[in-house]
Amino acid sequence: MVTFVSADWVQQRLDAADFLIIDPRSVIRYTSGHAKNAVNLPTSKASTANGLRPIEELARWIGAVGLDDSKTPVLYDNTDGRNAAMLAWLLLYLGRTDVHIMETFWEKWVAGGREVFYRPVSPTARIFAPRVRPDLRVSLAEVQKPAGRKLIDFRSRDEFTGKLDTENKPGHIPGAVNLVWQDLNGPSQQFLAPREKLLSLFTVCGISATDQVVAYCRSGVRASLGFLALAQLGIPVSLYDGSYAEWARNGLPVEHSEMPAQI
Image (cartoon, rainbow, N blue to C red):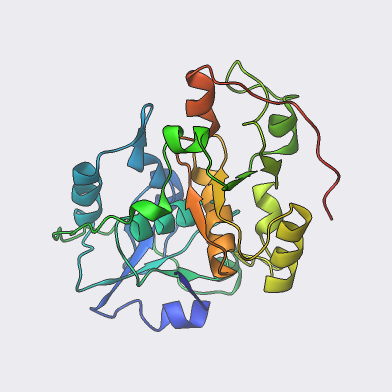
């Protein structure tokens, strides 16, 4: 679903007319240093307090930075990859099949002595044509009737158990298991852990290759990293982008159970 590419691969395409380099970080991080010709599309702008923006708004927002069917999107990120993961999920949900992500984080790009730019790139707006894939997203109503799907909560352990209360309703969605999103990152600034490590993590959570999985966190951003990891393993997965914030806001029941320690 997503192709992970090396930093060398990205560097070779910075000036290519048929590729669009997209920086999904905040404006502050983008202007503190970005790749050559990279346009800024902060993932945080994709949603409001009420959830994901309407499809038409998202299409205009994405098209405004110059992405259309003539351009192949190439994303990069720093820290733990959740901004690029969320934008990748969004592009997949809107029908793109050509999403690329740099397999190492921005910090490694800088540490490697590659060129860094600071002036914002002025994009040329284009028409982004969405082709929605509803199978990649689930609603509140669908989560309430999981129909055999398995729920994975990608928040922190304290959020999952209810020790940390972010929504005035501590706990997790009944039946969910917990896998902390940061555990999915690989060593040496790698976006994702090796396949064997990912398989081990999901096996501990009781997930097999034939399961239908729903990924969630608080607002969908951290869970998008889980979405990518599961998709890379070929495990059918959808994102509940409303996530725990929407669940709690609607006064639905929660659990506070612990899980066995993960390996």
